[in-house]
Length: 217
Image (tube, rainbow, N blue to C red):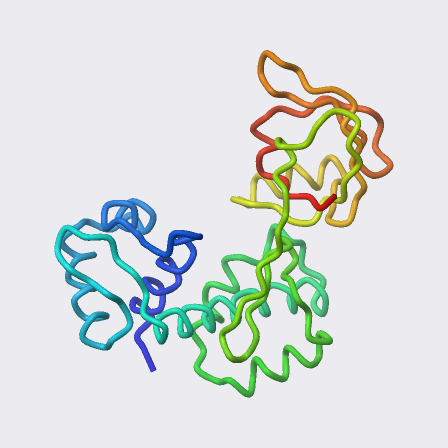
């Protein structure tokens, strides 16, 4: 069992690492908005617990056990978000802060029951994959909408860097996961895209919006 602060660091390391598996201390400090000396102090604690590989002035890596524990925290967060949306009627823009609190509950049975009630979902309301109870994550090879070409027909499958404000914007446009998207035109100057999304009329969306939308072909 780990402290709330330790769990937050583990989760941040897991999410920042990406394909490289390594995280710079400075990047972790900025992500968590915590000063470097405090971050270094926590890394030493996690190193002593064999959760990270840590040396001064070198990138940090989660150990195999660290990866598992981080994934299990993310599992609890994403299951909670799905439960709040599917069973309690919350909007997808309302669930993050609540899940941030519930993810620190130490009750595997509670989350296993939640998983079963939801029918063992593979992704959360934002399309992010949910790790299984062993901490294994099935990554989905989504494509960023900005990488699509004119004439392509794709399906909106996930949102990335999904702030509450961005999700509210999508709500006002009646855009949701599962919507078909047709790329009619891409403006060479600024990368904005003229799109048909779901049942919406043809509309131009900025690159700022499009780069946050993940699709499958």
